[in-house]
Length: 115
Image 1 (cartoon, rainbow, N blue to C red):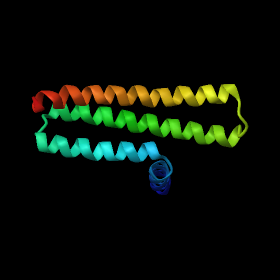
Image 2: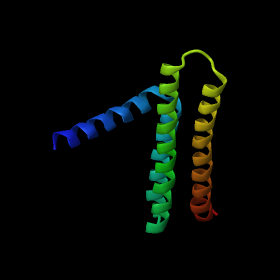
Image 3: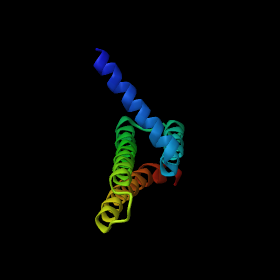
């Protein structure tokens, strides 16, 4: 049981590191709060909430993985290297794709309610 508790502590520490150290994570946090507030105000259906939760969690997961890769790359290869740069770019592209898909989901759910 102690090992499980420690795992959760490590994960929450990582979440704090992510939000405290990454401007983009704070932007994601603001967007998450705004979307959840809008969802409650709009009275989303269960299926719409499922889509929102999947979209938000996908963006957060992509951002966490991108940040972890960047931190490891900076530690293991502090000098500029084209392959390290390409790896960072690809990881950032993963966040971008997730964010664009989340935006599309948000538009599909919220725009019809606004119109």
